[in-house]
Image (cartoon, rainbow over all chains, first blue to last red):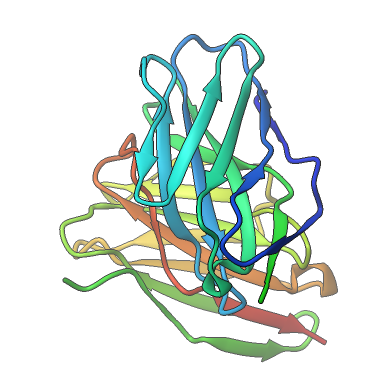
Length: 117
Length: 113
């Protein structure tokens, strides 16, 4: 079974600083996908960024980038120039595919990010 | 472009009762997955529906059942509610059961008293 570990329950960062949220994963699959989601207090899970296991370059989406280190099985999220609106829970997730052709997301425990003015 | 919608937003039920939650997928999506998120935890996969059939199921008892309609919308039913069923229930839609991008709805917060 696949597993996602997020070791930082909470992070506090000053506005405009960069922040790195840690994520390590465990899988025996050769092909897999890694996701980061943001969950504000409203509850909705907002897709941020995706990295495929065969992608040679780190994924980037605006201020978000994914520091993918395959040998270390880590997929850290980097947010540049943090903003007050970045305060939320952040979840790392891995795609797990079944033999029946379906797939599900396996989530970590999450990191609560607080941006201080 | 309509995103994923869920109803109701909040729900309070008593132990032993039954509940039905509803989800409409993002426009153009045909696959719906349901997740349960207990307070302070990451979401846990319940099941996925595609072509009106349950394609994959997580580690949840048979009290949890679902349905998908021809218009791709879906229902999650929970029977004989327990206090431990109190959680945020999230619906996610994708294009195909292996679609990489899963778009989530705002969730239904269920409280069982």
